[in-house]
Image (cartoon, rainbow, N blue to C red; front, side):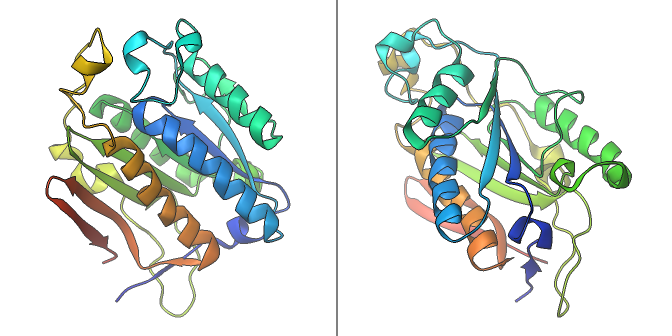
Length: 252
């Protein structure tokens, strides 16, 4: 079994580990809540924790209520602003929200997390990360891209992949690089089925109720393993809720 050892800076940084969460809809809203829990756990263990910036240009619509982490009073407001404000109040944080798409000019983060519904955005992020990976010497440690965690799903299935943006120094023969979602399945990626819905009931025809939150919890467990165990023994998985089945993506 091959192993990838976590980048040392993430384990003992002088600043909170920086995270860009791109997309806070069905999966992203659950991921954000999980990141707050992860931050609290890390701080209790003596780690500086996380600093998260949330990017999403969308506003809350009525059909988002129920499947995403929104209430009726949120309708018409920025998804990123609503969720980030709620997390900040609940956990005493100062995380940032950006009601726009992530682009190259935005702050560089140690961990990129994508919860988007189209292949084009993933391809653009892959190109951006690849172009910057060789220029890391210009940036402070908290501005260096190290990992990219991607979530994607269809009606009742999905996948999570965590890849490296640069070579990570290893010990004992560990694997220094992990392929990203694009490097693994770029040619096979298609847009997730996100047809417009006018109601919560209609949206359930396109995505099962708990596919997003299930993916979020299992995917964040990969990050937790990186911090708690200081290594990864898998770097992703495929999930199918019907029938319930999880297949790991081994490090090779």
